[in-house]
Each structure stands twice: as structure tokens, then as C-alpha cells.
Image (cartoon, rainbow, N blue to C red):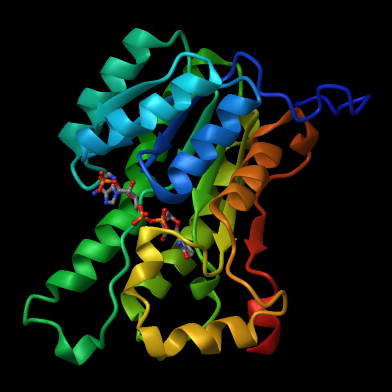
Length: 264
Ligand code: NDP
């Protein structure tokens, strides 16, 4: 059982915690890594582009803590297992896993090739990557017996049918990610491992650059706060979910989209 907090002093601290963040070399993953580092955590970044990871590590170094990067393709079990072996050699234990890696595919199903390549690549990255990482890290968290926090990055697209652009593969992967989160919260609770999801709306990263220019004004108009989200705001939510303050929070999907869905 995870004890409740008794004071707000240190309730959001991640001092001395070790976190794996997939896709931590840029965008929301890097914002989460920086937010974690500012709260005292050490970050292990998992990604493919190691040049970008080196730039991210420079930013993290300025904040303080012990941060490292590991080459990892979340669609490839061998690559994951190699990175996991390396990270557990470097860090005594892992307390937090953020399954953030993701790609977006914009387009209609009938326009895909006959092997549905884009469908399967999207599902394999956005959903199965999360599953593979949870399997590998979850087993080690269970065996260490010290609990843990797993945060899955999904999207408000899980709840909507985006038609401009069409995103059936992406939305389906994210909807499944939300339910996987709920299932894992129940399965892993006996090991004191909490599992939650963050479902952002439009947030200013490279991924959002795939949005057609003609949709930009529409998005701002429809968002209740009248602006896009900033990556640091997702970082703040991730800090809360990983922190002692969220000891009673598991199996929840936290939408952070400036009220965009309210006007669906
Ligand atoms: P970016 O495109 O900026 O970053 C994507 C990250 O995923 C990169 O770090 C990339 O690293 C990593 N990645 C992609 N494929 C793989 C792979 N096969 N193996 C390992 N890492 C991979 O996107 P965002 O930061 O915007 O998105 C992060 C998450 O947030 C995603 O899951 C996305 O779906 C979700 N999200 C984003 C929203 C937004 O508006 N920005 C809205 C809702 C959800 P590398 O290429 O080096 O491997």
C-alpha cells in the first residue's frame, strides 16, 4: 500500500528518483525530463536520434542531476532489452517510466498501401511501444519491490474523430493506450505501481507541425483558453502524477487541452 502524504512540504518532490522517459530527446518528452530534473530526479532518455539526445543532455546538465541517453527503438524488442540492460547497469533502480514516444499519421485508411504499413507502424510505435516498455520495466519494478509510477502519453484524439486531418490509426492507438493504462493500474496495483495517462491536446512541438496551416486558426478558436498548450505544462502534470502527492491516483487519464474537447 502506498501511504498518503501528510503535508504539502515535499509533496511534489522527485528528489533522488530515477526516471526513464521514452522520446525524451525533444518535444514533450524533453519538457517532462526537464520538469523532473528541476524536482530532483535523474533522467534516462530513450530514443533513436542520439545527436538530438546529446543536445537534450546539455540542457538537462544545466539543471543538475545524473542524466543519460540510451539508443532505443520502441518498436524493436531487442533494442529495448539492450537499452534496459544498460540503464539498469547505470542506475540502481528505476522509479518512474514515462511512455512518451509517439508518431502521428495523418491520412485516410483507404489511401494507405496494400500492407497498411502506416497503420501498423503507428500502432507499433504508439501502442505496442508502450506495452513493450511496461513489460520490461514493470517486471523489474515488481522484482525490486519498491513500487513505481508509470505515465503513458496518449492524446485527446483518443476521444474524438479528427477529420482534418484524418487520424484513425493515431486515435485508435491512443484510445487503446488509455484502456491499457486502466488495465495496468489494476494489474500492477499489488506491486504498488501506479499507472496513469496524460492526454494532451494541441501542444507546441514538432509533432504538431504536421497540422495543416488551414487548421491552425480553427484550433485556436475552438480551444477554450484560446491558445496551444506549452510542453512545460505537460511537464508539470507529469511531475504531479509521478510525485508522492498523487499516491491515490491510478488508472486515470488526465486531459490537458485547454478545454478543446468541450466544444466537440
Ligand atoms: P515529437 O515528434 O516532438 O517527439 C516524438 C518523440 O518520440 C521523439 O523524441 C522521438 O525520438 C520519439 N520516437 C518516435 N518514434 C520512436 C521509436 N520508434 N522509438 C523510440 N522513440 C521514438 O512529438 P511530441 O513531443 O509532440 O509528442 C510526444 C508524445 O505526446 C507522443 O506520444 C504524442 O502522440 C503525444 N501528443 C502530442 C501532442 C502535441 O500536440 N504535440 C498532442 C497529444 C499527444 P526519436 O525520433 O529520436 O526516436
